[in-house]
Structure formats: C-alpha cells, structure tokens
Image 1 (cartoon, rainbow, N blue to C red):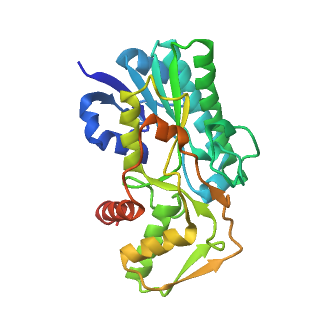
Image 2: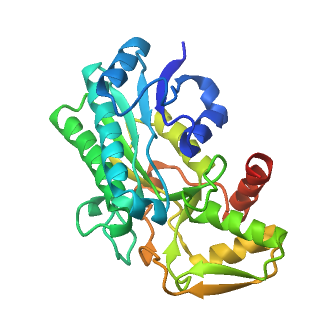
Length: 308
C-alpha cells in the first residue's frame, strides 16, 4: 500500500514540481487547494489531517513574492506564513503524524554574510529588512520542528532550507515575482517589442544562488527515502552563486536578446551575497542535476506555453 502524503501548497511552484516528479507515482498525494482547506484556520487543518490520516506531511505552502511585494505587504508576509506553519505543525502532532518535512527558506539567514551560510547561523544576526516578515515566520516554523523533536524524538519533524528557486509553475508577474522569472519576462518582452535597453536594479554585482525547482522536488523524494538519516535542518542548493548581471546575460543569450543593459543605482538590491553552505547536503548524498542554462531553457518553454 502506498504511503500517503499531505502536501500543502500543491498548486504553487514547489508543490506543482513535487506533484509532477516521476517519483510521485510511488505515493498517494493529497493536496487540497486553499478553498478546500484554509491553512490559516487551525480547525480546518486539524480536521483534514484527522480525516485523511497521512503518513507524512510536506509543508511547501506560503505567501511568497519578490522584494516589491515583501516591502509593500510585510504584515501579510509575517502573519499568514506564521499561521500556516504553526497550524500545520501543531495539527500534525495533535493527530499523531510522526513525519513532517518543513520547507523553509535561505532568507532566514542573517544579512550580509560573506561566507557560505551554514545551518547553525539561524538567528545569529540581523535579518534582511526587505523580507524580514517572511523570514521570521519561517524561523518560527523551523524552531518549532526542532523543539518538538528535542522534547520527544518520535516526532521526526525536519526542515529543508532551499536557496532561491525558479522554474516551471513560477510567477511571472513583475510586481509579484522573484528575480529570474521577472527577468525572463522582461527580456522576452523587450525582444518582442524591439526595446534596445533593459534596466537592471542596482549595479548588478550582488550575487545570488538560484536552483531549478525541479531539483528541489527531486531532493524531497530523496529525503523521504532517507528520512531517518536526514539532519534536523539541511540546506538544499548549489553551493555556488552568480552575479545578477550574469543571470541577465544568460537569460538574454537563451532568449536571443541583443540589446544592452542599463543600471538604476537608485533601486533596492537586497543582500549583497547569499549563498548556502552545502556540506551537510553533500554528506547526505544528494546534489542538484540541472545547470543554469538547462533550467532557464525549461522555464522559458513553460513561460511561452502557459503564460504568454
């Protein structure tokens, strides 16, 4: 009999990639929409878990967005993500679900760290102000999983901390999207409209680590297969990064855009560098498979087919 997964955020980018992965066939996955189960309502969450009796919960739901959205709506990014995380974890325990994989975010780490971000750095410094609310909510969920396991090791509630993600099922609206999908749309439209210049926020020298979301889905199934060995908290990423300018150039090359880039130094750029340390990930025995060029190509195919 197949193990049953309760997957939150099943229609989001991460959840959709988890559902699409070929190993999803090895499980029965229940992934209710927000209309079917309001994750900010504890009783609805608890009732659903009691009814479905999942073997494991994967919490990938969240209110997400880029710098602009985080700056404009900090209350929602804090409160809604906090409510979802706490409701899922507390209801899982109340209903005797022994395994839970919490998907957090590398934005939990202190700002302006120039070295690889290790799992021990959580709460060791000031958070990046432009996404502080979201980060606080993710820290709380991560710590709650730790505390439950510390009090009683039967609760295998563990957290994966992905780096920045992009890929199929991403948001491409410039007002709500993260950098890579926003740039794909911006450069694609610039080519279509024969625009000679594309603007880059800041000097483009900030460095970012972006992993293809399909690779995170692959990690999730690897983690389920080796859950007992998985560390309490584990970074999931490339362990390498690129400048913003490099992402723009790579995307432009794949799209075939031949215009030039101009920098708007008045715009916010977020952290100068944010790259995870993947020492624990390597020891755990998993690594990403998709190159930046391959990931951009797949994302562009999805964009052309589904978004335009």
